[in-house]
Image 1 (cartoon, rainbow, N blue to C red):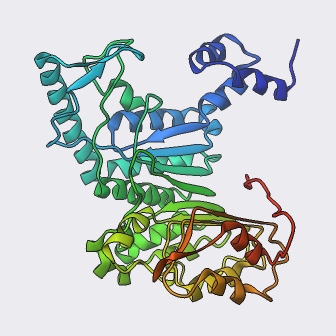
Image 2 (cartoon, rainbow, N blue to C red):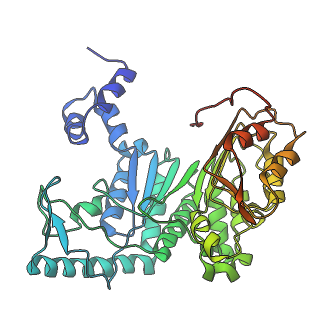
Image 3 (cartoon, one colour):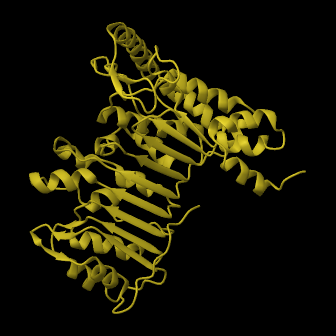
Length: 403
C-alpha cells in the first residue's frame, strides 16, 4: 500500500535516528522521506573530518538536495590546553572517572595532530574552498547557524577521544575563545559570498556561557566587508549576538556593522542582543555601543518582527528606530533594555500619534530601568500598552513568524 507523502513524513519523524538510517536503506517507499529528515542539517567546522563529510554529502546527486541548513561549529583544538582528556564517562549514565596516564598520552598526541591539521586548513584557506564548493552544490540550503559548541551529531566529535569505544561517552568539550568564534563568522560568510548561496536565515547560537561575536569582526578590509554584504543580501531572518569588550571601544568607530546589516534588503525578522553590555557595562561604567553605530538610520521596508535584548539605547535613538519601522512591524519584543537618558514614559509619549497599522503584538520582558536612576522602572504591561497605544483591554499576542 502506498502512503501519501504527508503520512510518510509523520512516520519517519517518530523514528529514532539510528532506526531511521536503517529504514532508509531497507524501505524504498520511505527512502525519500527518511533522506530528507536525515540530511536536512549538515555540519561544517575547522576540522578536516567534518569538511570531508560535508564534501561527500554535497557531491551526492540526491542527498545534496535534502540539505536545508548548514551549521558551522566554531570549536577548536588548542595546543596549550591540557585538561581535555582528564575526565571521561564510560557510559551515558555512569559516573565520571579520571583517565589513565596512557589514555591522557594518547589523547594529547591526538589533540596535537588535530591542532596542526586545523591550523593548516585555516592558513591555506582550504576550509573556505571546501565550504564554498559544498554550498554551491546544495541549492536548497537556506539557513546558516554559527555555533560555539559541539555534540555527537557533529562527525568530528564522535572521534574526539581516539581511545573511546562504544558506549564510551565524550565528557570534556574542547576549549574555545572569542577569536576562534569570530573566525567562524568570517569563514562561513566568505564561503556564502564565493558560492553565491542564497541564505535566507542566519543565526548565532551562543549557548553554554558564551556571549557572542566581537564587534572587531567587522573591522576588515573592504574585500572582507564585501563578502559580509554578499552573504547577507538575501537574508530574511537574522538573529545576532554581539559581545562588547572594553578594549574594543577605540575601534568601534570604524566598524562596518551598519553597512553590513543594511545589505539585507529583504529582512523581515531581526533579533539583536548584546548580553555583555547588560553584565559588564552597567557595573564598570563603560560607554555602551549606541544604536546608531549598529543600525545607522537605515530602514528595512519589509521588517515585520523586531527583537532587542540587553541593550543600552538612548531614548531618542530607540524612538527613531521604532518610528522608522512601525509602518510594517507586526511584532515587537523588548527584553532587559536600559535607557541611557530620558525615561520609558518619554518613549511612550514620543510614540503617541505615530501610526502603527500592522502592529498587533508588543512583548516586554524583564525590568526596564533608566541608566541614571536604577530605582525608576516601568511595569511591562504599562509599557506594552503604551507602545501599542492601548488604554484598556488585553494585549493581542501572536506566535513567532516562521518561513
